[in-house]
Image (cartoon, rainbow, N blue to C red; front, side, top):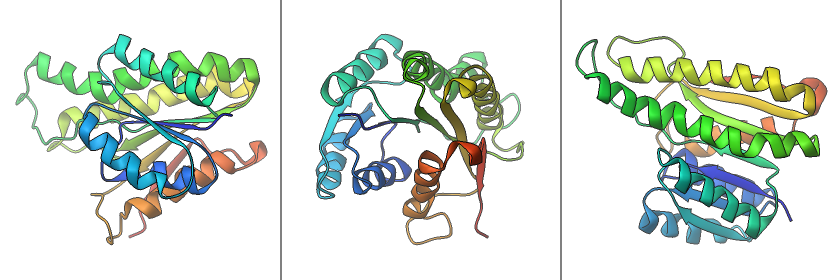
Length: 217
């Protein structure tokens, strides 16, 4: 039995993604740093009727993240779809963060995605099927969000590289770039955003998209 893995599960997009994949009939593995909040989310997702397992791991801890991904595969089988949704979102202007601060932002926004991709995409390529999705952001660089602008640009570059390497082998790699602040009931409602991920996962290969810009305004 294979299913979905969501790395970076909070009360917004992450929880909505888990619920959407569960409603689609997929067992779901949740990975996040905060175990207490993770279990609360897992209980809510179980209401959708699909099996749910949860693993605590910091996305910047490569060994812990790989162990969580292995545990998810052991419980649910090789994943059909993996979403990297972890992000460090903060405002900072040019020069406000020192180098370590910039690297810390990169480690969450890009490094964890790179670790996850390196761990799961070779198996997907061997099976000649699978979906790897990354939550993007900052469709345009903003001097009020320097670290986020830089790291989200790197995420898009990473997705392009992964698509070049693994797309021809049957793996659908794409980003969903959210162009606003996520808020339930607002224009960037997490449930509506989650539908875009589901559409990417289920669309036929001849219509694969590499990036979705979510901006309903």
